Structure formats: C-alpha cells, structure tokens
Image (cartoon, rainbow, N blue to C red; front, side):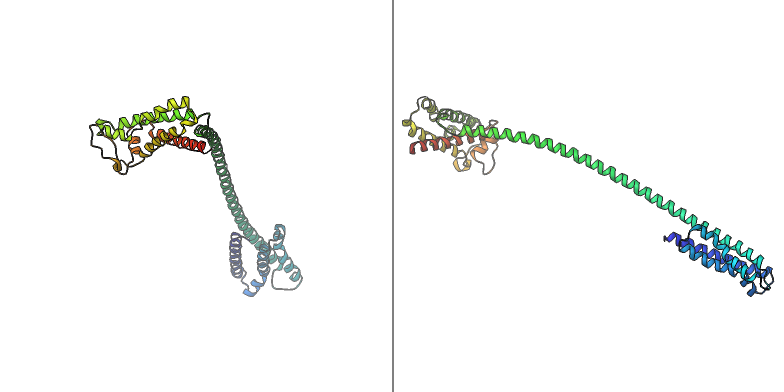
Length: 322
C-alpha cells in the first residue's frame, strides 16, 4: 500500500470521527435526550466507521463498500424495531444510513482523488523514464554511429598502411638485392661507390671552402682520393681474379676515409672563422657539420658508400678464401 493511500485513509478517518462527534452533539442538543440514548442511537454509525475503514484497508471491492452503510442500520432496525424502547428506531436507522453514506462518499472521494494523483504521478514518472530511455537509446545510437565511422576510418587507414608496408617491403627487397654482391652486379656496385665518393667530395669542397675558414690541407685530409675511385672504371671493365688484392686495398682506403668522417672535428683540426658562417656544435662529427651546412643528402651518400664497401670487401675476401 502506497504512502499516499495511507494518508488518504487517515484523513478520511479523521473526517468521519469529526462527523460522528458533531452528530452526537447535534442530536444530543436537538433531541433533548440523555447522552446515553443518543450514543445508542448512533451506535450503527460508529460500528460502520470501524468496519468501513477496515474494509478499505483490506482492499475490499467497491460494490461491497457501498453496501456497508446498510448493514448496521438494518441490524439495528431488526433488533429494536419490534421491541418497546424510548428510541425512534426507524428514524434513527434512516439517520444512520444517511450519515454512513455521507462518510462513505467523502472517504471514497478522498481515496479516489489520492488514487488519481498517485496514478498521474506514476504516469508522469513513467513518461519521464520513457523520455530518458529514448534519449539514452538515441545517445547510444549516435555513439554507435560514431564508432562505426571511426572503425571505417581506421579500417581505411589500416588498408592504406598495409599497402605502404607492402611497398616498403618491395623497396627493401630491391635495396637488399642491390646491396647483395654477386658476380653479375659486381661492376655495378663498383661504379655506385664511385658516384657516392664524388658526391661526398663535392659536399666537402663546399662546406670546407676557403671562404668558410678551411684550407686545401683540411680538404685533402677529408676528401676521398679521386685516383682511388677513378681506378674503378678500368678495373670494372677488365676485372679478373688477379685484380682482387689491388681492388681490396683501394676499398679499404676508401672505407678508412669514410670512417674518418664519423670522427669529431675538434679531434682532427681547428677551423678558423671564415667570411661565410658555418653552423657547428660541440661534439659535432665531420659528418654532422657536412649534413647541417649543405643541402645534399650527405648521410645517404656516406651510408650507401660505406655499406657497399663492406659488402665488396667481404665478397673479395670470401672469393679469395674460396
């Protein structure tokens, strides 16, 4: 039983008791009878109030509640109607019926209004919950749509990354093939070192120019001797196994010069301040300074030349052992 329904019963009971007390006083005064007779005459009404509220509390069906006002007045009339008594039994029976129906009407109206208020409140709560539910569903749908879009975008990105990965694999395979020294690509790799060495020398000439504070001695100390890589052209055209030792010696010298570029400039020489600025930092290697002060990809030239040198030297040494 809801709290509102209990409050409705209490209000109805309070009104019923007020009506009963008012009736006692009213009939006691107007009838000019002893209070005991008035109490006896209104006893069916008092008993009805007790039975009625018990029935309401026990959720008795409505048609029974509307018959209850007739029960005690009928009993009262049957028991005292044919017995000599100072009470006007028929009149009192009618009065009890009227008072009982009055109370029944008032109480049931109060409970009905309470019930309607309770129903309206419950309907309002259900409506708010339903609206909240729909909002929650719409929010979930929106979130799901957003998630689908993100997943679709992510799938497209993964697809693109997959293609990029495949392309990178292919490029790596081609690069490894180029770096793998065989009899067939031996001459090609020799000429590749020659190109890289020339490019490195050009960068050294630009960064360590006279205008930038260097001199010919510094450039000669850093440059790869052109005589070394120019020899490649003749050897690659007429190469035989007898040339292996000579070629290996040349490659070791070139490799040594490439390693020199990885040393700190301060450990090798001091460069004066020139007319044109050169960006230097502490602990810079020759390769760092070349990279920072020239647009050519000197690190790429250096790395490729050094890698091919190592591969060629290994190939020549393995060929000799074989």
